Amino acid sequence: MEEKTVYTTKEAAKYLGISTATIYRMEKQGLISSTKTPGGQRRFSRENIEKYLKESQNFEAPQNPSRFKKTDFMIREAEATYVAKPIALQTDELFFHTDSIWIYNADILKTNSINENSIDLIVTSPPYNLDIKYNSHDDTMSYDDYLSFTREWLTQCYKFIKDDGRFCLNIPLDKNKGGQQSVCADITTIAKQIGFKYHSTIIWNEQNISRRTAWGSWLSATAPYVIAPVEVIVVLYKKEWKKTSGSRKSDITKKEFMEWTNGVWNFSGESKKRVGHPAPFPVELPRRCIKLFSFVGDSVLDPFLGSGSTLLACLQTGREGVGVDIDKKYCELTKSRLLTEGQINQLKFDVAVGGK
Image (cartoon, rainbow, N blue to C red; front, side):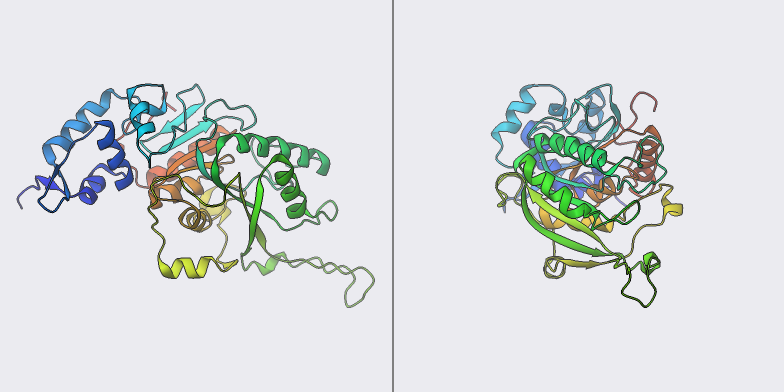
């Protein structure tokens, strides 16, 4: 078969392993060039694509050198109406990266690797303080200490997010271990005190009936326990709910939109054994949040990266993903999942950092 010499935008993006939004940005930055057909469609020659791949070996961040330092590339990005503000920085915390994925082995309370007002969407599931055996986090705080910790990391996230940025926060509805607590209500109140505005709450029905084990007084009104075997996704935003920044390109289908705007989501959780993490959430959760609440090419942050589900969803949907985790083991787990489940092509990207 004769080797292809001219590619459409979609074909060129697939060849490079990136989204079409990224290839448009690369063209605006002068990193790759195209010609146009009489009908105005872009065409990329194989010669130009190979030239880019060769030259990109000299970049610290192949598709987005502007993410590191204030250069001419950053100025060009600022002039483009749909291009996101640079997100991440080249710091000692950087564990792994591709053109669109960034992993930082860092404490979200102390990290200096994310620019303020640069994130379009945050999707995360923080520790629940239920005595889960993490490697590097104490999940047995007093409830007051847990809420203080929550206030600290939410304050950090408020700095990172854009004025029209959204926040999908996966937390328990309530808890009974160690005493009854209204976790969702308390964390939502703290978020509003920090400055986040409330939009809605999605009920995630994991269909996990095995949690129904605490009946209290059996068949009696003495001391019954009412347990809802669900979690919630609290949807918050910073200043403006209407999103005006970004590519304005949505990839959600009509069927998905109609189904997901119903605030009760039904899908199963993730297997701890399969993933190798004590509290993973399924890729389906961030995938829905990302497609519903962000545009193609937007920046997505997970400040408690864990097993990396959010970054896998970013790969699937053509978003730029930034993950932060204090535990090096979980950074390594995420990297492994990106290389296997995400099928990142190591030959095309500078994916290894510092031999990690």
